[in-house]
Image (cartoon, rainbow, N blue to C red; front, side, top):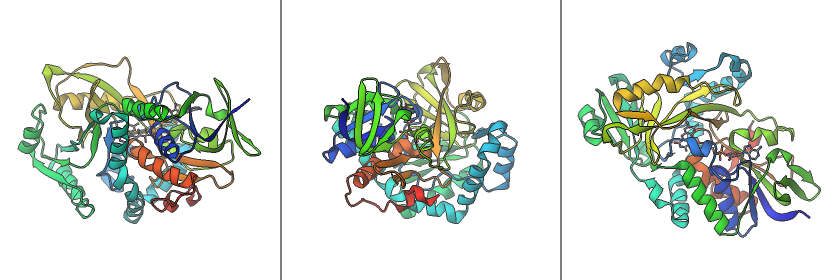
Length: 415
Ligand SMILES: Cc1cc2nc3c(=O)[nH]c(=O)nc-3n(C[C@H](O)[C@H](O)[C@H](O)COP(=O)(O)OP(=O)(O)OC[C@H]3O[C@@H](n4cnc5c(N)ncnc54)[C@H](O)[C@@H]3O)c2cc1C
């Protein structure tokens, strides 16, 4: 006999757990399904932990000749591609390029703004409720610029944030040194973005939210989401602990969402930008106060509970191709130049995949051809940031409430 719930959430990453908590708060019975026994074991575990309230402008494809040439020659540490992946990625890359025009980038930024605006406060509410405020620092993060040209660009980019009320400090080389005394090397300057939140254990935060969901009466089940089946009056799934059913299902499988929407006949232009991380012991008792982005290196160093985490930029490759952490090998020496890193702490580099639509906006809303099926994926570089706030929007939509923001820009029908 199948156990019945109002809503099944497929995927226990930050996005799925965010949706589960908000739908549960509307009085619905909810079960979360994952292939792992615990939440936050995949992409939501390995990121840089930034709650990106200052990322008003999404990561668009560069249009200047210099970066394009470096990308084409696979020389840029912030981006790497597999030649074998290019044929499959060509049409997605073309759409990404087209959406990266100044007008397209502005359109995406305006569409994402209502989500970005509430991203930190939605996290804070869940952190308060789950007793995990200690994982958050209101420290912001810093862009470090080795050259005057990149410093000028970082300052110009920061100035674009002024109309949106974001705060930042422009620092010369001495100012950078004063703020982060353990940094070494010569910097033209830095920009310290003050509004983002910083989380010292992203996977731990997802687990704290999942624990809150369980305490409030939710259930987590281990299952392969690919076994989802449509019934006359809803959906069913075989889990390790028996069959379950629900009227509504939310697909929140991050980079694996195609495993469910693909067989149901949806063609959605989602690709992944893979990324890696490695932890290091700080050498000589060095302290890094806030995460730093080495602009020329395209990597982030972030202080985490486990050590200093180096996260790499984007790798354009097939999601399931074997890991090729060349960007980690390229950037580790650069990171060692600017900060006293000790031994590697992980046996091998962690790899994850940012699920990306070509306009850098997520897909949130109903699946047009299947009653009771909902999409909530494609959160690109900002899924850790946006999980709770898009969870609220998903709850509005699933329960038929007035959505807190117009969901049209996130509808799958835009493709
Ligand atoms: C290197 C790197 C750095 C990043 N830094 C940041 C950052 O600082 N800030 C930020 O906001 N974002 C960052 N991101 C992006 C962010 O991590 C992702 O957008 C976000 O984690 C996506 O969350 P999700 O819940 O959609 O996916 P996931 O966290 O991947 O969750 C999907 C879940 O689906 C489950 N699953 C998959 N297949 C199946 C199946 N067949 N059956 C059952 N379960 C299944 C998985 O086990 C997983 O738990 C970064 C990403 C990378 C790679």
